[in-house]
Image (cartoon, rainbow, N blue to C red; front, side, top):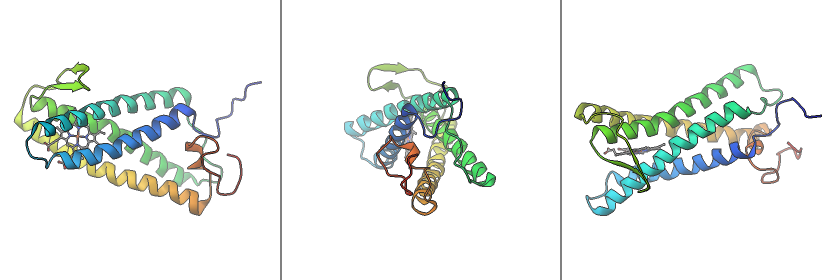
Length: 191
Ligand code: HEM
């Protein structure tokens, strides 16, 4: 008979989306920080275009991840996790999702307000989401920069928490976000 209890691990698609998005965010941080200081050459335009295309991909992947999470659910909190700690982790994950969506949307907005065209990897033309406006461009650019700082801080905290769970609390928090067999449970249990 099928079990109705919540799963012990994140499912394969959630795991794949988690690590793919993490990788793309790291790449985007590097590309974004380097590209703004490049001299005005055709390569700069090409790098901006890659930044925008990966950013739009992140928007789609985060939307998919959220939809899939709502549909397929999440593993139950680990036993013995205090309620307050569960609430803090939950709030942190909500903040991460909000920033992961707001970051590309602010990029799209600043691109539209600047009057630049937007193509996804030279394959799909995407519409502008605002009229051209210098004031809105300034505002969206500032938001893009500030949200990036907030996102970087949260990602660092998030990674530090995962490592703390694995090395010091010795629980399955990190193990269950990886395919079975990729990382040993710190207590040698099968999570
Ligand atoms: C999660 C997705 C994204 C991340 C992490 C990200 C990150 C960054 C970073 C770190 C910068 C440099 C900020 C600075 O120091 O000035 C930047 C700039 C920029 N981003 Fe993004 N970005 C994302 C999505 C997008 C998208 C989807 C677009 C457009 C469709 C976009 C358009 C731009 C533009 C045009 C700039 C240059 C702004 C300027 O001229 O100062 N970004 N981004």
